[in-house]
Image (cartoon, rainbow, N blue to C red):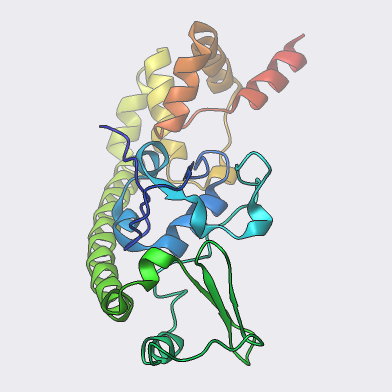
Length: 257
């Protein structure tokens, strides 16, 4: 799948700005989710890996405090400007702006027009709304964007509800199988590494990540897997297999010495 060389923010039509990648979901999942929720739109229904690899956000959606001299972003950058998502666009201020006459004067005490054409309007409540020139040029786009976003959000919510129901059903089946007496008796008859690995999966998958415990035999089995290929070992963990972390294996190796 090819990289989309445009901004994924709904209704953003700028194609001359620098594009930024999303935070790596495997390293900074909290900030990754903040980006997604702030932007909204169709990316809410996309897979994390897909968003990280193929979706981008343009420079105009980030405050100046997040910019660096090399036109990159600081490690804590979060998109907050020129977003059309419901959480950042308030209906009343938008209606006030779009209903103003075209020839109305600009009050220097409350407005500031930069050379690039961006306009910052500050209300008495100290709330600031920034609109990109391309977005502000069409009144109809600003008026319709909340309604369109509501429809997109409803569709996304329905998809997420279906996924939630599906995952609950799968988890219930896995729990039932993991606690099934006949299934456990069958596994206990085998003593191979494959049987140890399988029993460990069914026993630990129903536990929270921080509550998982492994026997010495399972750790030694995992160490053998790790020696065969660290990349394969990390791939297994990344794709949902329950295995001791490399740090746990390192501690075991230290104790054995």
